[in-house]
Length: 241
Image (cartoon, rainbow, N blue to C red):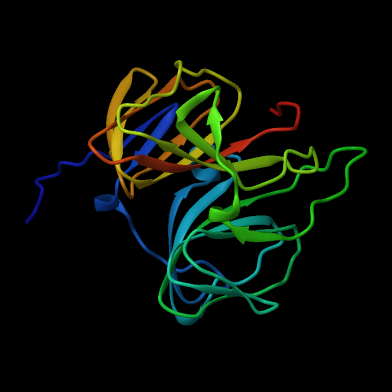
């Protein structure tokens, strides 16, 4: 049924909410039997690119000169050397890594790409791969109802971080955050309310949010099941621009 122009999607100077009813799919250069939904990138002022890719059996993402983080949402993918990643599997590929990313079954993956910012005294990171289930969750600022899993080491070799946050029903961020870090967020499960600037957005699984630096932000989980999202942030570097 036609929705007569209604959508929860919203684009403001300090944030973007992109809901699945507005997703547009198109292949990116180097992809084979795959399409991408580009959620954030330089066109909206982001310093990184984030997209989800839908890959047919035997399809490939292609390679990039940029550093890349991949998280498997559904299906199974093989990383060049034969390592297979199931749902919840992830990998970090450093700049220039030419390992192929191939779907073993129809697959849906989240991809983050960013130009690497070297830091004097620290070497470029190496390849990392693993499973989210093997990461010990940590309470957020002492609140055991909000569990954080960090995919990348805290080493200053890395210029960005990717975490999942799991909120028990009724749990919230402890404060409205306003900070220099930029975010890309994909809602994985459950739902809630996200404050972005002066807007209050209902959020459910499949929604994407981009937050510009200093965008006021707060989340509260609603419903009877836990809410979970995966979050990108830039860090470990002096502010640019």
